[in-house]
Amino acid sequence: MSKIQELLSGKTDQIDYEKIVKDYPWIIKKGQDCILSPDSDGLLCGLFMSTYLDWRIKGFYDGKIMLLDKNISAKDCIFLDMEVFKKDIKSVGHHMVQFNKRKKPSNWDNYKNCIQLNNLRDYDGYNDFRLKYPLATIHLLIGIVGSKIKFKIPETAIRALFFTDGTFNVLFKYPENVLNWLNYLRANEESNPLKDVFENEKYSVFSLMKAMDEFFRKRDEISIIKERGDRLRISETDGSPVNIEGHNDFYKINSEAKERIEKFIEILSNLTNWKYNQSSWSWENLKLYKFTKSDFAGKKTRLNNKTFEELLSKKPLTWAMTNGQNIEYTLEKPDKL
Image (tube, rainbow, N blue to C red; front, side):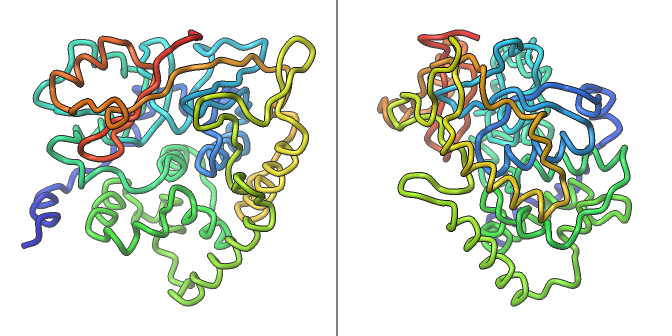
């Protein structure tokens, strides 16, 4: 038996969508304000939630910069595609955030308002890193919302839903883990719209390759140097803002970047039939927050129980384990929410 099969042995648990909705009723509440990660997963989440639940996109956050509608407070928003380590902030994410489940930090309940897939299965980086969730946040949202609202995923949407977060890469690279998570999400059930995505019998491998190739070509048509067409770039590597300019004492996404990302949103919208309502998306009159993003590798810090607890004592805003030996994290400095 291979190591991954050994790790997966006996893991037949399944998500309880009813319990998710009961514990986090805001996830299906209409008219919520949200903040997105500025990549394809975040953009898909925004399109999806605005289409079916009339959510409004009030800002973007990439770990270094956050842009937020001037009239909104972060605690009144739901962060999509990121886990916020604050009790009074709601968020949904899928990254590996727990280091060792046998030594949970005393302030672990800071995640009490966070729908976190790896935490739901009590997976950690020390024992279970190879079992971490391999898909994207949008797939989770489809399952949750689809448990309460009936809708169909069109075949054309599959290319967008396979592209995001490199889903198409992991399907055949880590098939055992993907299949286990699809079972956990109950993607094989007739009532689950994820079945339309992952058990679509009309897509042969060859036709899917052609469809993905067409998607990449459309993405590349709107890409420029240092600016991939499938993400809104709002910060440089050093954390300084980019594609942002002053506007009426606040800030806005500059016209060139906004035009590029709206073209990508249009591609996603045409494939999914999730409508892009421009009035639901905030592109200007934004407050700008600057944070400090670091990682253990860059600081030459060894990841262990002690250093993980030391990190949490600094009250990081967000973080994610990028491999078994490294964590990327964000501290609220110089700005605070």
